Length: 431
Image 1 (tube, helix red, strand yellow):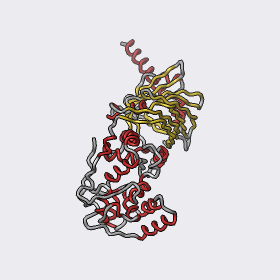
Image 2 (tube, helix red, strand yellow; image 1 turned 90 degrees about the horizontal axis):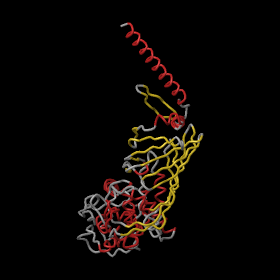
Image 3 (cartoon, helix red, strand yellow; image 1 turned 90 degrees about the vertical axis):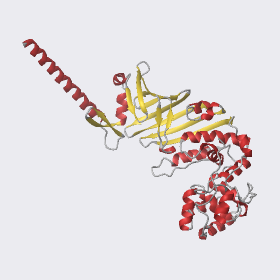
Image 4 (cartoon, helix red, strand yellow; image 1 turned 30 degrees about the vertical axis):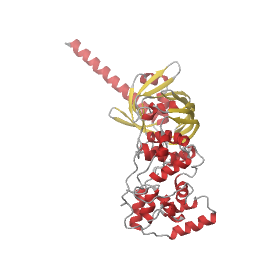
């Protein structure tokens, strides 16, 4: 019995010593990782204890060989999904792998991007970090300098087949089963942490798409103007020109997509109070109206890009513009230029004055809201209307100035049958 008590006492003392040692290690780690005022920090939990730690110190600690060896083989829960950690002692390289992986960013809205798998490697030499980012056959390089207040990552995606990039989203893009996609994509990007500010410089070369059947859209008939007198609305009409001024000023210059506008939209959408900017060309909007629908997501944008690139070759600018004008929404139940002109002004679309054309074009950024605003106040967004008028081409500067003055004092009373109460149904989807 005495031997048993002695063994229990020794075990208790050993356990107490171990607990004290663990506590000492925890307090030591807390001292090492404690952030200075203004440092990039986060909260971590060690059992019941919550610690405020500096992220830079945490990264340095996590990539120190004897700590990284303890992480090897572990799985960590994160916002992106469960991340499996491995350590290559020979290369002094930490690898993080999630499958599946969810990526979120305010730059593209609330819908996340889902990848079947994603992998990141990290090597550290002092405060210099470098590694790779990869998913399937797409591989990028990154590097950055670690500082107490943050980390700027510089990411390079070399020329990569566009089809390989699209393959990352094969589960969500049905068109990839039959579309032929050519061309290469390259990206230079900078990610500022902890601000999460992303700057992207993409480059698309030789992108071409076939197999989607957009050549049949040349014969598509819209139901939006059904029952109304025929309108001979040409692509050089006032309304067509106003729509280009409002929605896609480089319409005749791009190949279905506008990388400059996409880049600007990505930048402006990162502000916390930003109203999301779409950056869709008229070609992409036609794809949205006829095929993809109104769901706001990065995958929808990728689908629209495929259709936009193909239709630029199969239809040409004139037919794309006509398709947009005959299908565009102009209020809760109003669609198509002819229906909009008839509903709001009681005339054919080709009879609109310059001021009326600008007024209708200015509604397109948010048709339902502007229709309701017009109904309740007799006005739409004046700043938007002035901006559209100022970009109307071809028109001399003095003429645009007079047009802005005319719109500024205009206070049209909407027709009694109009503004959110039209009888025109939505356009029929082609797919």
